[in-house]
Every structure is written in C-alpha cells, then in structure tokens.
Image (tube, rainbow, N blue to C red; front, side, top):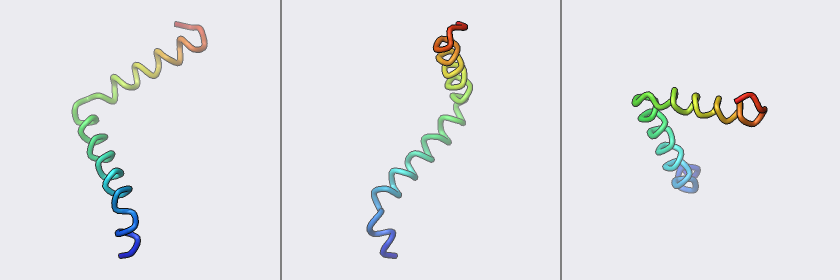
Length: 48
C-alpha cells in the first residue's frame, strides 16, 4: 500500500499513456506512425 501512495502520480501517468496508446491503435494511427518512421529512416541513410 505504501508503494501506491508514494508513486500515485507515476502510476496515473502510466495509466494515461496506456489509455492513449489504445485509443491511437483503435483509430488506426499505428500505420501512420510506421510510415513516418520508415520515411525518416530512408532519408537518414540517403535512400529517399
């Protein structure tokens, strides 16, 4: 119980992060993020 009291803010932020990731995945944003990451990598190594 002491752990929960001391780390309440960290646990709330972690829970909010998980909720936002689930919402983003549900909206199909993972494909957009992957496409952007691939484009950035291709530009960095000079193929794009």
